[in-house]
Image: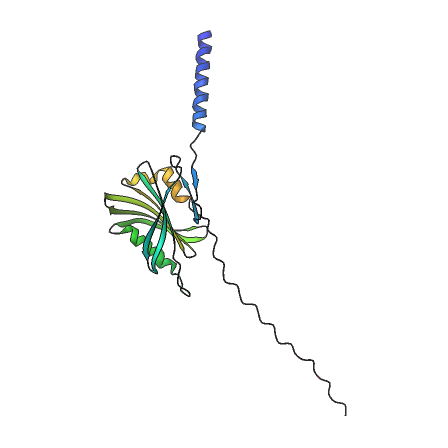
Length: 206
């Protein structure tokens, strides 16, 4: 009997230990660099991203782009942000700007699928791309959003397309939040007060 109870006790101990191990899941890491206008959630094995600044050419001239990169399980992760700083009086064609970003990332490749999305009320899209890089064929999951006159872009790149469908990559791609304050609408000009009428003068008494 003692052996029977000992076996049961060991079995229960192993079950409890396994349950405790399953309950303890690795947590994702919140990332929002100081001064940037976004936040994302990084896979558990990534604590931070490497920042760099690049000069790029945009439809409104050269601009400075802030880019953040990291790698997780043979998947390269990128976030970029740049402000268009439009000339005074210029209006941003959001649709044209989004399409331009897609064409630039796709290069000589092709768009496998695409859908329009919104992030915190800002327009954008999510697309799966197959293209060529210096190291051969690459698959890209791309999210691009325009908030005000700032363009945000998330990319996950891998040589094997199935690596873009892991829970970690999906959560990273879907975690984008715009933290920059939305531009205020121009204040309406105060309404002019109607001119006050002078009181009518009494008619002279005859």
